[in-house]
Image (tube, rainbow, N blue to C red; front, side):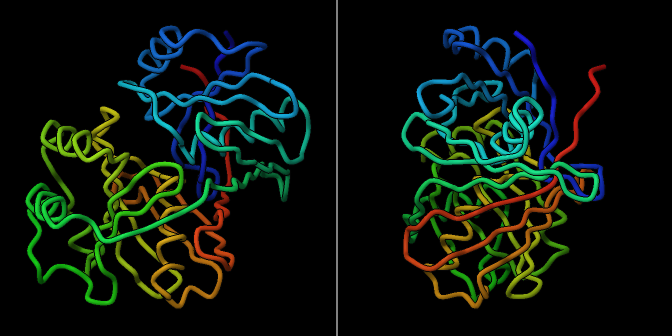
Length: 278
């Protein structure tokens, strides 16, 4: 199998979230995909093979399969454009059908995904309390303009909106305790965010369930956030930007376009660059 390494949601040609990408004639068996994802060690590796009028797609973290991964979808779009040219590609996931578009612009290869349908709801109070304890957060540290919310766009994420950027910069938690909490709650990430303005967010995403302390750019959570902001009536103006990874030294920028219609898919886009194999 030929493995490509592509960083998604990079900023000014650097940073972003690296993903492994494998384009195959037929998908390997599950054990082989999991083994390669573990060996690669990125937060996700995506596998895709043509089937009918779409590409059959599966995503694996170093520890387990995940239902949907945004940054790996963006990386996949870049790989498909490199193989077949700029265009829109249909993707068949385990539980949804989506699409990714990729195009060249100003010397960059950009990609945009159309997420699965979105939904959001208030989290169970016990889950919220456990998340507060995990990150050692007090009630006064939360942004009163945004409630904590359980949000979904192909996978479940817990949103914890904080008041201050400096508190976000100090995010830390015990990895194993986070893995257990997220696994028990069926969460893919826990997203801590700060709204600098109604259309500019800073984010950090804990990904302990995938064996990774933090994700530097999380397209699935960005899509879920877009859907949640729409459900809440937040003044997003149809578009928000998310800055992520800066506290890790891996700057990432995600563009989220939010159309009308509760539950409708959200578009998430960003720049990509190829990673040279060591």
